[in-house]
Length: 292
Image (tube, rainbow, N blue to C red; front, top):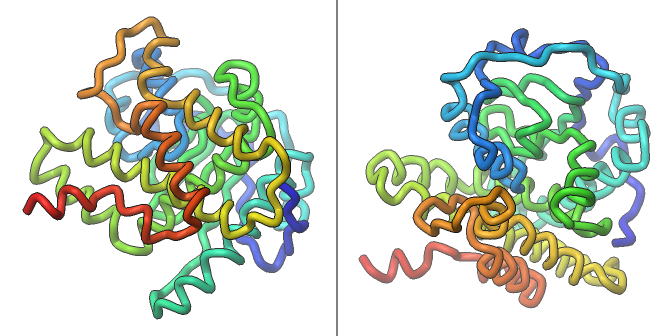
């Protein structure tokens, strides 16, 4: 995807790389003794850190150590640390330029999310951040948290290759920011508390909507897409489907345990966004409302 170079004045960036932070210093909220599948699921774009961290609080914290990469002191420096940092900031800048005007047209208050770089470990408004969690969005501080080493895991371990697959990561997390601004995340959280048995199903719908929003962003910048981009994105959506991740972890896929959607579902909703370019087409909750 051929994106314009980021404008350092048009992106909000925080850099925790090189801070020498340890997991213990982040409040000891994340344990390392969780199931392998939980860590793999955490690599999926859009994981709710509140749910993930809550599920991992029982374990002790381990694995301190210093962070190797030295971060920048401002957006221009942080976004220029390496090629992947710049690529991420370029995507963030494009996402801001795409979504902010749409919110303004709809007379809905808009606030840009911040992109928070960290290496191995960090702190978020939702608790500890560690690279095993993968990229995530924290609604408490409206931050998209990213350890760029995750992109190597995408390529080498998940088989999700190509620049657009990486852009899809940022765009999906940005989708969660849109849901937060629109009040959708809060509504879903409330519904999950009222009906715990439907919590996973509601989580899946929220994640699929974020996939669709990622596709809408790409469609609205269709002139920037290059040959193979759509295929790269759809392949990434397939590789991070709950059923594929479960099989790769040696587990039998269990639909009732899905939190992000099957490979087919994730591809379907990303494709819907790509094909329609219409955010209104991303209503993954429509059939639930019709049942009422």
